[in-house]
Amino acid sequence: MLTGDRGKYLGIIMGLTFASLIMTQQPAIFLGLMTRTYSFITDVSLPDIWVMDSKVQFVDDIKPLQDTELYRVRGVSGVEWATPMYKGLLRARLANGTFQSCFVVGLDDATLIGGPPIMLEGNIEDLRRSDGVVVDIDGARDKLAKPSRESGGKSVPIKVGDSLEVNDHRAVVVGIAKISRTFQAQPIIYTTYSRAKSYAPRERKLLSFILVKAKPGQDLSVLTRRIRESTGLAAYTRQEFMDLTYDYFMKNTGIPINFGISVLLGFMVGAAIAGQTFYNFTLDNLRQFGVLKAMGTSNRILLQMILLQAILVGSIGYGLGVGSTALFGYFMHDSILAFKFTWQLLIFSGVGIGLICVFAAVISILKVIRLEPAVVFKS
Amino acid sequence: MLAVRCRKIVKIYDSGGQRVTALGGIDLDIATGELMMLVGPSGCGKTTLISVIAGILDQDEGSCEVFGKDLAAMSNREKLKFRASHIGFVFQAFNLLPSLTVAENVSVPLLINGIRRAEAERKANSILEQVGLGDRTTFLPSQLSGGQQQRVAIARALIHDPGLIVCDEPTSALDHETGHTVMQLLKNTVLQSNRALVIVTHDSRIFSFADRTAEMDDGRIVKITDTSAAH
Ligand SMILES: Nc1ncnc2c1ncn2[C@@H]1O[C@H](COP(=O)(O)OP(=O)(O)OP(=O)(O)O)[C@@H](O)[C@H]1O
Ligand SMILES: [Mg+2]
Image 1 (cartoon, chains in turn green, blue):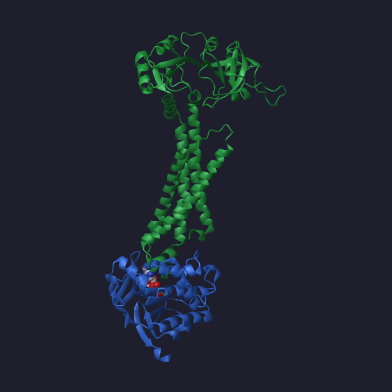
Image 2 (cartoon, helix red, strand yellow):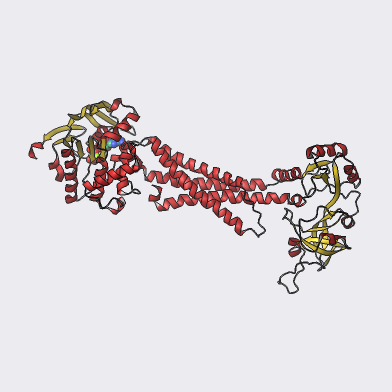
């Protein structure tokens, strides 16, 4: 019956498509952004447990420890190995004399544990060469790139063999790495722990994290508790540390609210357009409903007819909206945009569209139930 | 046998505090096999009366029995079932469902009565044959002329074999010749079977089809003329 009025039909479908697009695409970007908050943790896959100062609230909230803490952690029973990691924001001076602040990550000199997941050029072992550093590809192409000689020309990415100064110390690029994009915009420079310490300003405490591997068969929650109790430090499994970071950004930034408002707006605009048009359609067809009533159709059947139509347009709109989101994600795949499309989002927007359709159907159904069949003889 | 038996029917509309007595005590009997015509000036209560007779409007006083059943005593459900099986409707504006084909439109009363779609459409096709539209079954109503649409509506009013058919101004939207064809069709259905037919009309050109004519004025029946002998 809805197809009898093509304009309204398209209007409803468009409203629903819009709503389901907004309700999947915005949360997908949101989830994408949120995974970036802890991608530094994800990239460090080998250790089971991260140990840090008990006041640390998220991954970029560095509260340094004394080096001696490393030995105390190594002494906890159930620890297979423990390695130090330095992470800090330092100033790098580029070839043209400009400064760029960078995250410097110092890896255990002996094992180099905690390094980037993928080396694009060079080898992580090259960090052992004097003044060796590895930079991430996005930083190399963008913030650490050398400006073009002609003004307005393309800048030249920094490459293996180039040198820069980190906090007045010479550093030579020995490798380019691919890392997961993080929430922070600064480039990441990997080097050894001892070299990172020499770059960093002299301080009594420079140890950011202690990365721990549990003995085989060791229960991780038992071990984290044991580390906490015997050192007074915070110890989290990888997942716990990711959750801590995620929760911090959820609770302490405006990001969730902003996206929540977008989603709510999409929902409300979709509900308004679809509900209104659907209702108008019902009003237009009130006489047909009256005729069916006069001929003996029960309210229950009319209700089913309306619901069926609502479900039909709902499914089409939902499919188109979710499909557009998937296409959007596909085309944005290689861009800087964060995007994470999970099955939960499908359910989320499905429920949203379902609510809109129920709303649209209910206001129509109320009208039809109250309709007196005697209207059929009115001209 | 009596198809309709109305006694002292009163209907008062209350629109915005203003009370309008649409029916002021109607007595009317309609026999099976009879074509009863209701005529009278605009606003005299013709539509109100057939609405009560068809069971789509409740009277305020009096009783209306259709095939011996008191409509006022029925529950809403019973009334729905009663309408679905015993009453056929024909409207001035045809009132076909625009997005359904002709055959689908005609099968609607059977579907309402719980008959399966295939069976319903088979019957629809055969009755459309009878009204001369056997070659239009897959058309949409908008693709038909007014007279053809009214014939579809008549097929729809007949398909479930109701005992009483009510028509409000069935020819007013049609030209003289088409109106004549439509009336002939309606008249035949009454004569063929033992149905009762109530037709409200302004259209003097079709008065001659009536067996009896009830003239109404101001909510009352002022005169009933028997013209059956003329046929
Ligand atoms: N729903 C309603 N609410 C209020 N008054 C109504 C309503 N329906 C009809 N009336 C009034 O009841 C009276 C009878 O109306 P009805 O429609 O039965 O007349 P009618 O004889 O069919 O007229 P017409 O020939 O113009 O169709 C009129 O005065 C009309 O204004
Ligand atoms: Mg009328």
